[in-house]
Amino acid sequence: MPDSEPIFLLLPSILSLILFFILIKRKQRRYNLPPGNMGWPFLGESIGYLRPYSATSVGEFMHQHISRYGNIYKSNLFGEKTIVSADAGLNKFILQNEGRLFECSYPRSIGGILGKWSMLVLVGDMHRDMRIISLNFLSNARLRTHLLREVEKHTLLVLNTWKEKCIFSARDEAKKFTFNLMAKNIMSMDPGHPETEQLKKEYVTFMKGVVSAPLNLPGTAYRKALQSRSTILKFIEKKMEVRIRKMKEGKENLEEDDLLEWVLKHSNLSTEQILDLILSLLFAGHETSSVAITLAIYFLPGCPLAIQQLREEHLEIARAKNQSGETELNWDDYKKMEFTQCVINETLRLGNVVRFLHRKALKDVRYKGYDIPCGWKVLPVIAAVHLDPCLFDRPQLFNPWRWQQNNGSRGAGTTTSSASSSNYFMPFGGGPRLCAGTELAKLEMAVFIHHLVLNYQWELADTDEAFAFPFVDFPKGLPIRVFKS
Image 1 (cartoon, one colour):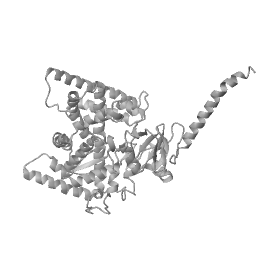
Image 2 (image 1 turned 120 degrees about the horizontal axis):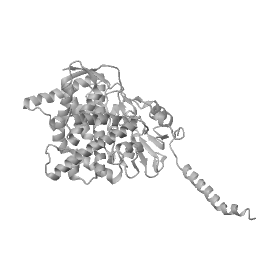
Image 3 (image 1 turned 135 degrees about the horizontal axis):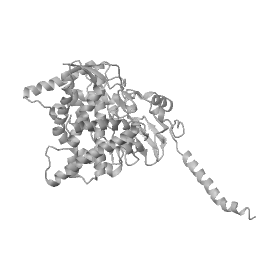
Image 4 (image 1 turned 90 degrees about the horizontal axis):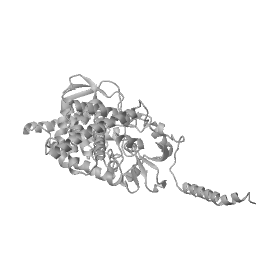
């Protein structure tokens, strides 16, 4: 009997464990999860999901999964149980319920390289405060005056260097334009200055790491990016120290009307928060806009009618400027670029600079009969909606006229994008996390296109196409040959 005593003592614990596992199993069984495949242990299906594919498609992986499981399916991606959504309604529902049912949840490696105070990874009140700072700096009044002039100036600085019949990378030229614009307006750094060029060099290394596998090992792109991040932050901090000293001495430079100056004067952010804010805005303001401009340069030669209509629109604006004796574009000119906005929308719809977003369920959510368990990762795939033939007629066709209200029918086989389709057009995200730089990005594209079509014709100098890695890029940099108009 004494020998059996320990068994009796352990019996309640054993029964409790058994009961616990039974309850866990029952809880798991009560979820009506979407169909899908969880893939390999730990790796899941991440390798297949991240395999490069044409940016004007959803890729073979996504196509096969949608065909087999439908627009909502389960998977294991980035080391987490995931609900993947190619469903327009669910994507909109996720973004509109940010902070209530879902919240931003990017892989830890992204926060490690962009910083814990980056707007991309922040949630809740801190994200709201950072976003307000960005929106104040990118206000409509500032866009209409200061930023419009800056965008045009930096556009011309790039385009005026293009020589007749020269071949160069359209991607690199677009990146030069957007980087110089952001560096000037964030920290008053002049294009071509040695310190600007050095920062650009470090930033290129940094960007390679942001989009690489998060392997913090010697020689990897990720490790080099972390080193470049440190160098960039030290550079920004030195700029901050100089500004603070000038402010204390009353020697402020009125020409330094930039984000750094505004944040130092009007916010209570710590040094670390300011550094991450500036780095994240440099990243967001430079990378996505440059890719979008490159995509427009890529798509337009395949649609000569669109180039013709763009030229007519911008020639009319230019003639009116000449008659009035004005040289610089103003906000009224920008608002006249109606067909240009159609081209911008179509470029963003077909090219999908932002392919998908990272979210996490804060509560158990039920949608269309499926359960999304609390804590699961949720991936709204924006590109899948933009390329859905049920929403957009012939979605692989570059057709700017689909965005016209009255559908002028100048393009072959054109159809207007229906109101319901437009409701699901979300190139800049949506809800409380709608990109703060949305209007600036569209302004950059419009002004660049204005001067491009007025002054140049171009052709692709080599075969190249946009690929999703999943970030969008051109393997050869999109080589083009230009001719002066």
